[in-house]
Every structure is written in C-alpha cells, then in structure tokens.
Image (cartoon, rainbow, N blue to C red; front, side):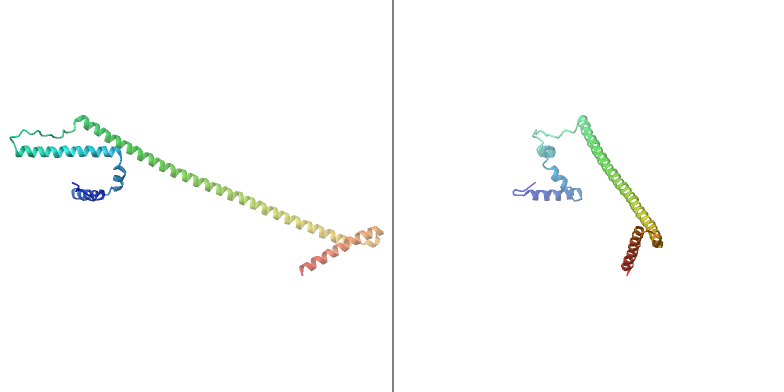
Length: 204
C-alpha cells in the first residue's frame, strides 16, 4: 500500500485521500488522532485491525486459488463471526463508555454551575460590602457635618456673649470706683477698643 521511501506525511496524505474517496467527506479529526496514535490501547486496536485485514486478504486469496484450481484441496481460512458472548461484551463496554461520558459531562456541567454560583455570590458579597461602606461613610460624613455646625453655633453664641459682656464693660462709669477698680476696668476697656481696631484693620 505504501511505496518504498514514502515518508510518514506521505502516508497520512494518502490515508486522507482514501478516507475522502470512501466516506465522501474530509477527515477533520487530526487532533484526536495525534492524541491517540501513540497510546498503547490504540496501537493494540490497530494491530488487531491489521491482523483481521491480513486474515481477510489471505482468505480472499485462498478462495480465488480454489476457484481457479478446483482440483486442489486448498484450505480456506475465514474470520469467524462474533459470538453472542463477544457481542454482549462489546455492547457492555459501549454502554459503560457512554455512561462514563455522561457522568463526566454531568460532572463538568455541575462544576460550571457551581463556579457560576460562586462568582455570583462573590459579586453580591462585594456589592453588599460596598453598600455598607458607602452607608458608613455617609453616616461619618453626616456626623462630621453636624459637629462642624454645632461648633459654629457654639462660636456664634460665645461671640454674642463676649460682645454683650464687652458692651457692659464699656458702659461702666469708672469715675465712681476706687483707684484699683478704675485701673482694672480701664485696662479692660482699652483691650476691647484695641481688639475692635484690629478687627477693623483685618477687614480692610
């Protein structure tokens, strides 16, 4: 079948041509064949096929010899058909492979579904954490704003009280006081006047 000197690639190309001629379609399972070609089970299977082919060709040759030379008693070797036990065994193996393939497919589908659920739960957990952090940040911001507002209100109240107190001090008639009181309240009045001057200067 293969001429002397033919490379492995030449044999593969010829096999593909033969496949296309017999099956009326191109061979598209190169990747599967590359994975199987060196596997022990595949080599054992191909060796069995080659033996059957040799036996078949041998039987065909012997039959033709017997027809051409009917006087010669040439034994004809024919491949025996599969018995019921062998047929049942082959069917059992086929069903076992189908069951294993189904179990593998179901396990793969379950793994895929579990991964989708896990990713969805993780996404929801992240969203809940982000929402909680956003709420905590909003609460903290609100608290700071309230503290700032309270501080401003306290500052306004203290400023009003100080202004009222300053006005009371400025209204005092220190002429009726003793010398010590006069000196004390005079100094307070001068401090109030100096503070007001500084404020006036800072505004300009």
